[in-house]
Image (cartoon, rainbow, N blue to C red; front, side, top):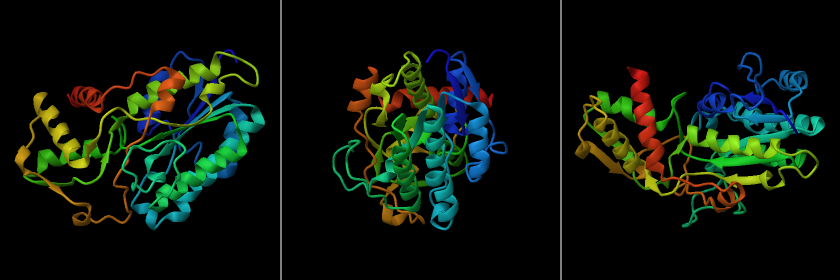
Length: 305
């Protein structure tokens, strides 16, 4: 493969927005919006892929409303299970490589250690089941795929926990945050950075075995572990260090158990992902989760000014 011809789906989401910047200069990139390419419209999806004729497809589009998915299972499965299978079929037909994002929610969180790629999935909610079905549909349709499993994603675009906490911290005197679920907050910028490495790996060689080390499922997360509560505390501390005017005081960020904060969809208690495989495959230096959080606060503050 020489010059990559890349089709990016989900350009307006957290990861898609970060990818648009990172992919600049790496070849021709086509990034249709949702009106032009809706995952729920299989015929439209096939037409777009066949029209672009990409040699790399990056699917950053997904249904991500985890709680709403409990009542919208059909819509969630169309976007997260059926559509990825269709994309993979079209990729296989074109001889294109496919990069797709999965989730820590394919696991039930019962394991004490960080999850390995080969650990048995056991999703607790509709969203996790749909994403797992999408992963399996991709694997069944093509070998030329890279599935990047991520969790606790945040970024400058879209809605996420980090932006919600910062908004509420400016409005409220008290926040009650779950403290018995752990993970590693993962920056969309970091995901985009690693994705470009995968693109480069796919693009640098031609032939049936090109980029062989990039195929399969890979966990991606920064190093370290933190609860939602401690994550919220660090977000607020960092924002205050940057001079943000926040109403809440740190001692009014109250840790609570999951049972005290009921949600429609159950969440895993452990969302930690073991990253040894991706570190070795792409020679990655994985930073601590706080590193990208500091960058995020600085950039978010700059955008607000």
